[in-house]
Image (tube, rainbow over all chains, first blue to last red; front, top):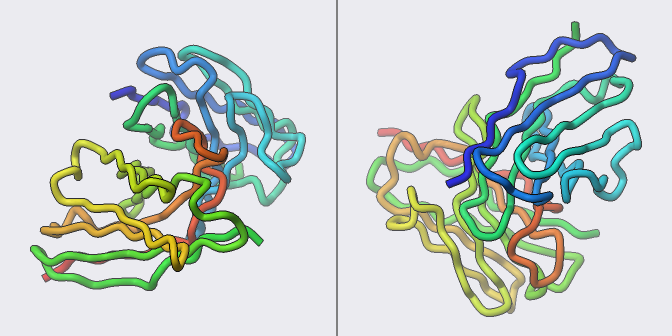
Length: 108
Length: 122
């Protein structure tokens, strides 16, 4: 099973600042990597798929990059609604699909 | 609009079974795979398995494969996840989630149900 490791566990950021979240895979997943946002009491929401393609309706301040084993989610300027937990997920080749443990972006 | 609506919260005793439903609307149900993902309280996301509503094909995570059965009813556009021999560590919110692309099993999940809380307690 491919292990996904996210860092940091918690990121304290002020509104208006940028944030960079990292995700590392234990083996190459090519570009088969998604990012999700989850707010308390809500289901996850797809932000990015294919490592760098924004899902429908996702603002341009969210961007994804990387391939192979190293991936990054960048939020260019945090809005109040962006404070949440972010998960990466790999879906390369064959199951099981695996998620990182999450990065909580909190208000500084 | 495209949505997945899940059944309500359940409380079960250890050793019992639970069956969670996920009703799809707004799209052709048989065209997209359905995944089940769970989240224990305060924890991360865990993929449990996948089913094709087109042909009933399934793929289960190793840690639940002996206790889980995923099915679909195409006449009502509903997917089901049954988990047997429940334990306290099965306490979690269970989500259904749709594959993003038609007939592509290896994909991100673009539509999620609202979640179903399953509590296992004596």
